[in-house]
Image 1: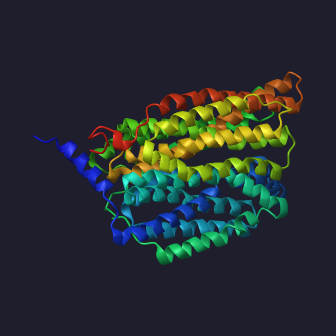
Image 2: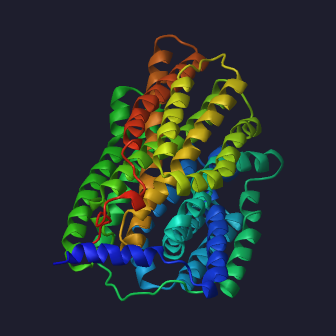
Image 3: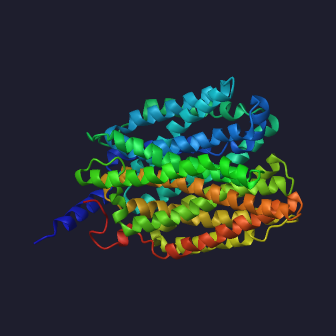
Length: 504
C-alpha cells in the first residue's frame, strides 16, 4: 500500500518543480523584479539612520537615548509585524499587499521628510517599518511560488542583494548625503523612488497567488508583539547600558527596563510558541512552526542566525572603531565600508548559479570558514591599525557572507511544503531581525564593558575603545565556529530523501 504522506510529498514536489506556464513567464519576471527593487529600497532604511544620529540630536534638540529610538522603533515594528505576514500572505492577493506596503512606506517617508519634531519623525519611522516588514516575506513567498526549483538559486541570489547589501550600504549612503545635505534629504531622495515603485506596482503587478480564508488568532498577535517586541527592545537596551558611564548602583537601576523587557520577551515568546503548537494541529497558527520539523530548515536557520549576527554586529562596530579610535570622518567611514557591500551585491547572482549547479555545501563550508577567518583577523585591531587593513578584512568578511546567504535562504525555504512557504518566509524575516539585534547587542556590550574596564585601569580613551573592539570581535570569532560546523549539515532540498519536506 502506498504511503499517503509520501504520495503527498511527491505530488507537492512535482507541482513545485513544474515549469512556469509560457503565458505567465513575462508576468512573473516583472512581478519578481519589481518586488526585488522595492524591497531593496525599503530595507535600505533599516540602517540609514545610524550615521545621522548626531546631526538629529543637534537639529531636534534631543539626547542620545531619544535619537536611538529612531532605529530601535524601526526594529521593534519590524519584529512585531513580520510574524503576522504569514497570515497576510495566505489571506490576501499579491497586488493589494504590495500596494498597501508601498503606500505605508511612502507615507512614512514623506512624514519623515517634513516632520517638525522628534515625535512626528518617530511615528514616521514606525509607519515606514510597517511597510518594510511586509515586503521581504512577500518577495520570498512569491519567488518560492513562481520560480522552478532548478532556477531558485539564481533568483535567491538577487534576494541576498536585498537582505545583505541594503543594510550594509545604508551607513555609506547616509554618510555621503550628510556630507553635503541635511538629514531630511535621506528621505527626500528616497521618496520619488518609492512613489515610482508604487505607481508601477499599481499599474503592472498582477495577482500571482491564490488567497485562502484563514482565521486570525488575535491572542497569537498579542503574544507575538510581547515576545518578539520584548526581545528586540531588551537586546537594543543591552548595548545602551553597557556603554553607560555610571557606578554599579546607578547601572542596576538603569538596567531594570532592559531586564523587564527581556523577561517579557522570553515569557511572551514561550507562550507564543505554545499557542502556535496548539493551533497548527487545525491549520490555524499565525506562524506555523511545522517548518522546523525539517532538520534542513532548522540547521539553515541556525547558520543564518550566526551570519546575520556577524553582519549587523560588524556594521555597528566598525564605524564606532573607525571614528572613535582612528578618528575618521563619517564620509570616510562610509566609503571604507562601501566596497564590501558592493562585493556582496556583485557576487550574489553568481553564487546563486553555483548553488543551482553544485548545491549548498561547496559554498557554505568555505563561506563560513572565510567569515570566521575575517572575524579572527579583526581581533588584531588596535589604536594604530591601518584603515587599509580594515578595508581588506571587511572585503574578506563580505566575500564569506556572500557565499552564505543565498544557499541558506534557498535551502531553508525549499525544505518546506509549498503551503508553508509564507510561514517559512515570515520565520526567515523574523530571524533576521532578532539575530541582527542580538549581534548588535553582543558586540556593543562586550566592547563597552571591556572599554570601561580598561579606562578605569588607566588606559587612554582611544586604547580602551580599541581593546573593547578587540574583545567584541574575539567573541564574534568564537561564535562563528558554530556556523562552520553547521555548514556541513545543510543539504540541497532536491537531494533530501523522498518525503523529507515537512508539512502534514
